Length: 452
Image (tube, one colour):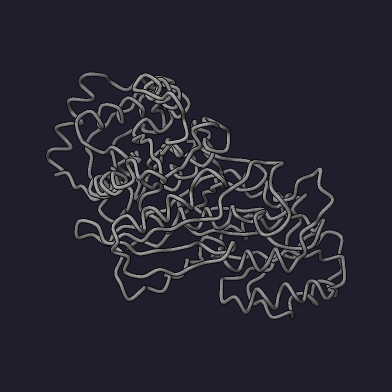
């Protein structure tokens, strides 16, 4: 199975330049973040791209509410990063002597057995003798940077993409489908987790967790093994309480990356909030299957088919960037539609594994182009020659080879996807089209989640 997208966390003392580094990485010419509707970029996390590689970047400084005087200790930063991140960037100031906090950071980072990169920032203000102290702390991979001057950023990016996430240890029971329950706190996420686990009365194994962990349970349904994952939940900006919940974003991204299908739980009394949209965007960016679930349906009084249809229309309007995601109304108390989640997840899993013959795909492409020819720019009209399916990608992905593909407008990509979904059943999962110039040996071409 392909490795998950790496999670890269930046940790360090206050004012060493963590947020500046975060912004510098994301603003490099190639390390860009999608601007497509439903994708995510804020002061906390974003998906970045560099030299045909992608990774999640998390700034631990962004986890602090500016109205809150509480500052996470370095130990809390590094412990959480060591738990959920694949690559840890330890950031220090070259012009400030090494201290006990720096040594603790380095020690915990190295003991985590994760990939560690030392970033020695502000080298423009330091002497060589000051820098030499940091190169001897025990982290063999280090980069000298001056973030404000843009020095060392590309070297750091090269080091990041060389790191490969390590395979998680396999359980004794093989899980065919990994199902992550994602959502804000208090929306009924844990209730649904327990209901899904107990509904079938066929729990293979269950490992209880703490508020710091991803809770897991294995369930067998219709001959398939499901691994259920329940996270602590993400709070809205300004609502994050003191303590470990501030780092729930790392666990949430980790659970998404480990999953095949995500269930996004939303409270029926508080729908279409910004964080729910952000979470859907994260799941889409990760290329995972998605089920939208409205919880606590039993609490709503005087509900009928009209109420459900009215809410469904409102949700569809706000989540129009994932029109392929099925919507379900559930109650963990009464058990309404709980079992149906397994059925939907099975269908999505099958869709994600679907393979289409190249001859059939090319017939579809000819028909699509004949019906609507792509327009170009500067008298350079794109020409689409043939299409193949990528076989080693967990998300359904298709490579379209042609010429002048860089001039294909985003609206034409949407047209192709809409027509493609009309012809083939891929509900519940993103579908990626990679446009590749015939003369360029580029594996993935340009993704619809990146700017050209």
